[in-house]
Figure 1 (cartoon, rainbow over the protein chains, first blue to last red):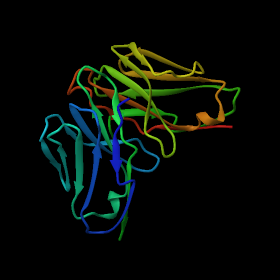
Figure 2: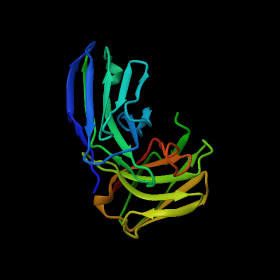
Figure 3: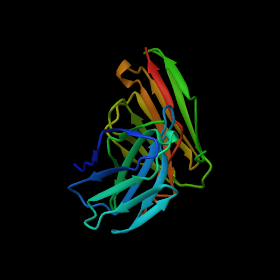
Length: 111
Length: 115
């Protein structure tokens, strides 16, 4: 079945550092989504990407839809303590209704 | 606030109890979903409803019974659960199931503990 490989599994960084995480798959997706989940809460949508090559920003966050449509990355610039949480990538295909989720990247930010 | 609310936020139940989880979306969406999130596992899709019709039952045991009375409300009825069913249960909604309108918005979840 379709799977997403999300890496790294966890990251420990210093406040102010930039962060990069990515998702890859052997399958082609038509939509890539990035979510953040805080402890005890549901995932919150950060960025949605609908076209190959698309680069979209949301404040300090930037995500790109890979040209091959098999990968996506998320960058966070100048991290702050409230960036702590789990970041999930998710992919969708045309014609299906399932959303495939990565296992998440757990981010820790040291002040 | 994502526009999707879930109640209760926390639930402890015995294996012989019957309880229900409720989800309500205020986004005008037509598709609603139930997911199970266990520790260190990817989100597991359980059920999908589109315009009140169930389109997916992802091999979920019958002790979980969904109900979608209208496009804004979704329930998950629980009966004779097992301890391994303890998890965070997330509800989500999307505009519908068409490409670019399938982007899902999640509620805060119900943390369920089965004793």
